[in-house]
Length: 290
Ligand SMILES: Nc1ncnc2c1ncn2[C@@H]1O[C@H](COP(=O)(O)OP(=O)(O)O)[C@@H](O)[C@H]1O
Ligand SMILES: [Mg+2]
Image 1: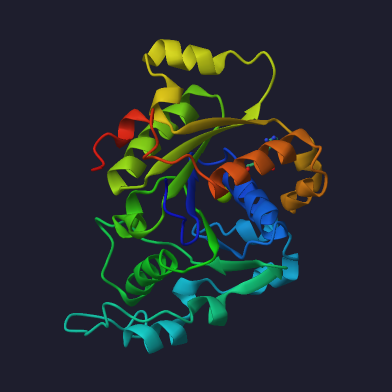
Image 2: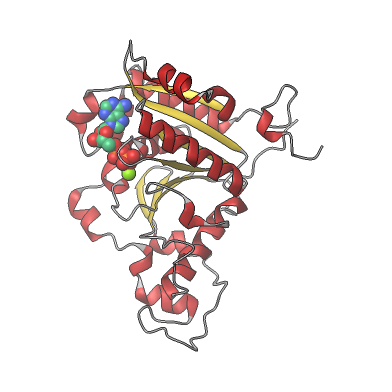
């Protein structure tokens, strides 16, 4: 049997515009309303998650992302952002135990939001104070207990390097049924596996009846999505989301709604994921020692 989790930690990734932020906000809301303490983390520099979660425009405009909190960064790393240069001595493992209590925003019962700002590319990224802090924060979040953490990302995950692997046990790759989004999804899936994320799910979003593109993608690429992902879920196209823009989370008020129902199902799947050590398990897990 699987060990009970210390708290679920899920990273949401996929091509731009496919519905990551919408899905993150809705998942966060389902879990929070079921009584789970949820921390939603916005890692996309576009910072759309506050709006999606229904934070009022004036309040969202006041949010200072973590990488811009110069005082906090200096307090934690010993270096004021922008003043570092050769010879600067960072605290490379700053203690950010208080990052959520100090910089997080409570957006609803059981639901807090942390806005990170940009994580720079691991390769070309500088060893600047902001990045040291962001990296420490990701590592810290991975260890927080009794809390569901949902990390909404900008397209791609390369910039996380290996910090994610420390505790983000699940990844939801979002795609629509377009060839390009599905190609990006396959790439994201292999990156997630390389990073060491155990469970990689595919959420195909904006599905309409009679759309043959998924099958065509599989035929043309010779790839079977169900073999490449631990689970594949479909989220229907929902015109009401446009009417609710930007506070899309209000779609969850009616759980009979097709999109809301599908998100609710995905949330319960994430809360009690299929055990990777179970018999008949997924082929990608064969390398795990028993
Ligand atoms: N299932 C859906 N049906 C219709 N529109 C959707 C659906 N999911 C997302 N959208 C819309 O698509 C747009 C992009 O979604 P968003 O969540 O911001 O994408 P991303 O975060 O991946 O860039 C938004 O306007 C959102 O309301
Ligand atoms: Mg987004």
